[in-house]
Structures are given as C-alpha cells and as structure tokens.
Length: 475
Image 1 (cartoon, rainbow, N blue to C red):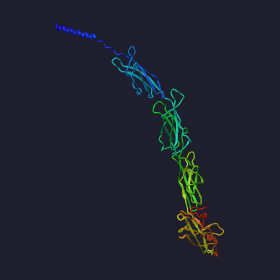
Image 2: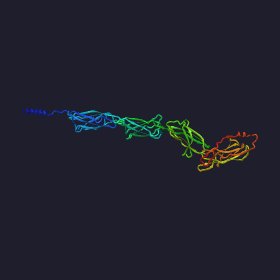
Image 3: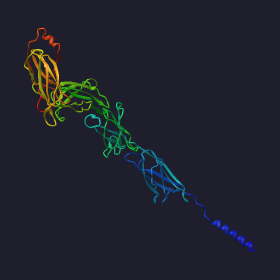
Image 4: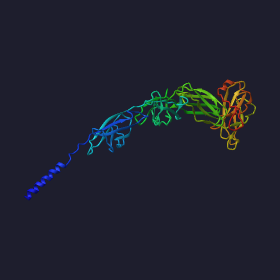
C-alpha cells in the first residue's frame, strides 16, 4: 500500500507541475521606418541625415535600446545608431559621390524578430564645370624663357543652375602638342587650384605649340572640363651664328663671313637683315654694314678699313626668330713706319746702277715706342716719268737696325719707292715719298720699249699714312 500511495503521489505532483507552466510567448514582429532629409546629393550637399523608428507588435510599440545596422552599396562608413526611449534613431550618411541605396536592420532577440527596412535610394548629381586658360602678355614667347599659364576653374551648383562658383582643389593638367619638336619636349605638368579656383604655373617650350589643359578632381562630384590656349603659343626658336670668320690683311682689306640659323626648329634666314658691327674696345659697338642673308642664312662682305677693330655679326630678331649675336673677332695690327727713301746718284747713265736706301720701324706694345724692325723684306719699285705703271726692281732685307740698301739698275728717267708688305701682326707701309732720278746716254740700239720688257709690272696696294699711336692706322 505504501508503494502504491507514493506512486500515486508522484504522478499527481508531475501533473500539477505540467498544469502550472505558462505557455511559451511568440517573438514579436519588428517594423522599421527609414527616411532621409534628402534623396539627392551634390558637391555642396554631400551629407544626408538618416532617421527612422523601430517598433514591435501589432500595437507598434517603440523598441528602445536596440542597435540599428545601417549599410549601403557604396560602402561609406556609417556609424550604427541606437534607438532612444521612443524607438527613434538618427545617423549621418556622407555620400561618396555615386548613386547609392541604404538599408536598415536589427538583430533577433528573445522577444523580437529581426527587422529590416529599405532600400532608401540616394542619387548623386555631378556638377558641370568650366575653365579658362591664358598666357598673359605677347603671344610670342622665346625658347627657354619661362612664361605663365593661368586661369580659373568653376562649377555650377546643382541647386543654383546658371550660377558659377570657384572650384578649389581641382587638378589642372597641362599638355603640349607640336609635331615640329622631335626631342626635348617638356613632360606635361599639373597644378592645383586655390580656394578662389585660380591656378598659375610657369612653362618653358622648345618650339611653337598648341597648349591644352583639363581640370579634374579626385572626387567624382564634378565633370572634367577642358580648355585650349587660343592660337597656341608662338615660340621663337633660338638663333645663332656659325662659321664666323673675319680677317684683315696688312693693307686693311677686311673679309667677313658667317651664317645664321635657328634651332631646334629651322627657320629660313634668306633676305633677313644681318648687321656687321664694329668696336674699338669690344664693349661699345656700332653698325658698320647692313647685310642681307642669302641661302642658308649666309652673309659675307669685303671692304677696306685702316684701323684695328673688333667685329661681330648681330641679328636683331623677328617675330619668328630670336635675336642672336656672334662671337667677336679681333683683327689687330701694330703700326709700321718707313723713312723717306733716298736714291743716289740723282743723275746717272741709263742702265747703270743707283742705290736705294731707307729704314723700317715698328711699334712695340711692350715698350710702347717704335723700334727697329729687322729681318723684313722690302720691295724696291720704279715707274717711268709721265707713266702710272710701277715695276718691281728688287727685294732687300732689313738689318737689325731696320735699315735697307739696294743697288738697282736705272732704266730711264723716273721715280723710285720702297714698300713693306706687312707681317702677321703688323701693317704694310711704304716710303712716304718717291725719289726722282734723271738718266742719260742710252745707247742708240736700245730703246725704252725694249728695256721695259725686262721689268715686271707691279700694282702696289698703297697703304695709308701711319699714325703714331702704335695700335691703329688712320686713313
């Protein structure tokens, strides 16, 4: 009986426990409302305030203290909010500049199901942009000389069409285009606009070029814009002279030649004016001759001067070629002087001999005075009375005291003179006089024409009188 009683009592206890346990409650459905203060974003309005309410059950009871997971396809960093006592939440969405969709989710709890809302579409609007580019000053630039490119970049606000605002932080890329330049062309550069949308950069070009620019920013809020420098940049190539030669002989005959050219872009110099300039000291210059370039820019001139000088060619420049000046060349000769010639006797039988004498000196730049000029060849010349033709008679060499003395035949009545033809750094000079000799008693079988056949006609370049300065000769 005892066992039976205990068994019945246990069964009763279990039944009572089963009747006392409440039934399990079903999790409530969660509802999330999701909204934004704007559905479009632009460069001036990049943030959206996201708001919403989390409720549960048929009575839409606010759910407090639950974390709302906000996400978007654009994957910006959105800080997840937590609902307040009224089930409300807010968060700031910063757009990356692309169209996006935002969703909101809550997780499962013991009393609540998972909740989800969205997607909330956010449309990104790109702003139109525009830019200018200019090269202040003359349109003509010079190779290797920097000049400034500048301009303004602006954008049109999405909510204020027709108005323009400066675009700060835009990267302006500069490019150059010209098929003439085969090498050494600069790498395109870039510059960033300031707060006022302005940009400026210095460039150097090797030749004329079209110049293009585009402005863009790293963020996708703005359309890329382009501009080109009107008519491009006209760049004058460098000019230079080559093969420049200037020589002056002992009689002052100057021969000057050279050629002008441009690089790296060739420009024809034909017909352009080239100046041949002259200077006493290599510092102060004046124009001696105006020349016109021939084919390939060649120029040449020949003339006589009687002074030592410096010479150079100069091109003043034109719209399509830079100015240029050649190297200077010094043509310098020191003065020589000859004494009066003496011939004796002054009267002699024809075909007999007379003696021509004189002396030669030169200016010494070291001692700054005239000294004997020994070891130099002096020519003795003759012309018949009443005639213009000179004839060579003989050579003589000056001794260490610069003296010469030569016996020559007297072919008839006439004049004798001496001539020094100059040396590497010295002027030619002649006797400042000619000496007359009277002849007589020519044998009847010999006539003047026959005598002349033994002589060599000679046309001497007659040097101008010498100055006493020692460095130049005044004509």
